[in-house]
Amino acid sequence: MHRHAVENLAQADAVLFGRVIYELMEAAWRRPPPEAARPDWTEPFARTINASKKYVVSSTLDRVDWNAELVRGDLGTAVQQLKRESGKGLFVGGMKLPLALAELGLIDEYEFVVHPRLAGHGPTLLAGLSKHVDLKLVSRLEFASGAVAMRYEPRR
Image (tube, rainbow, N blue to C red; front, side, top):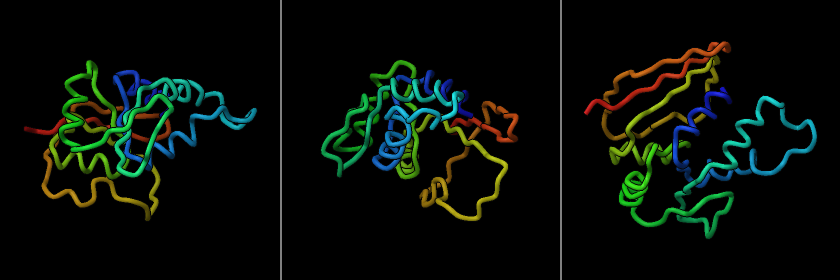
């Protein structure tokens, strides 16, 4: 999964995070871990996420660093501008931000990774979406763990 995430990040010019996921990712990946705190197989992801350009959508943060810039103002206008500037595209992560972008019709591709575990609790992805978005499967990747990554494009 981490190798797949590295490949995804390499296909984007930048990562677009909301405040919560930015803070979680920064806490998990920014600081050098104490010896043996992180398995070796996570290091390529750690290097990639640390080097990635990041944009953070937040009305509560005063400043960000970790190779990041704050995105302020109208979300639709700001993301459209970032998409125009981008060459390879933007990678978006989180719960609330993808919902807001889906509502604005600004997501060109979705990737859902289904893990073989029933949790029975937790947040629901895209909960509250006001309208259906019909999707077309464009790729599928199965992992040895049994997880499956499915990539979709909106039918327009």
